[in-house]
Amino acid sequence: MNILISNDDGINAPGIKKLAQLLSRIKDAELYICAPDRERSCVGHGLTLFDDLFLYDYPPEDLGPAVVWAKSCSGTPADCVRLALAVLGAKGITVDLVCSGINNGGNTGSDINYSGTLAACREAVIDGFPAMAFSSTKGIDYLDNFDIIVPHICGRFIGKLPEDTILNVNAPNVPWSEIKGYRAASLAQLRYPPRYTMMDYSEDEKEASKNTERYAFASFAMEMVHAGDDSDTAMIKDGWISVSIIPLLQDCSGTMDLVRSLL
Image (cartoon, rainbow, N blue to C red; front, side):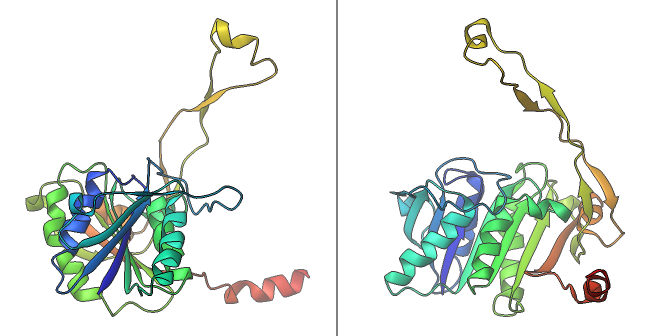
């Protein structure tokens, strides 16, 4: 089985090394890694179209025993997956599964629209490959919990995912003894109020920055607009590992009559 691994925390993140080590335990697995050369969290599904992309060699042995090819990439997580699939395909290597993570921070609810972790999986699914995302909410203090989670999820879902879907797994960042188990989850609707602070320029910068305003992101405060008891965000708070199968495309059939009436 050929597995491509990526993330958005970067090639040096502890989560990707943990994931590679765990996927190395799959019988006859050969792992290929292509991940950003730096932090790329929250970049969404951006692709690099008008600049060149660069791949840099990375020591495979530093990531996992079954890793046979490892590169860092100058682009986004979606770039990493798209480029790796092209390069490997040119070598005659067919990828059977794409995995992304283990992310330092949750990817629940409408956060999946911002997430580079999910974008790596989404790009894989767009290109016709099954994909799984793994995330640890609010940090990776208990990364060893994935020693149990990854084999459990892979053993049950590899080869069983519907076409054009992403498997999204989020674990609470708590000791294993406090985790209640696994639950199928819907997606919560989350909102982050747009809060920015205008920043002052230093005396040396003022002349060069004339007629330019400078802002810094000011708050990660989150509002739950809609989150039922079965939503991933609610389950994580209650100590469950949330597992969601997310369709690549939304079903617009229910709104087509409205569009026709307004056209």
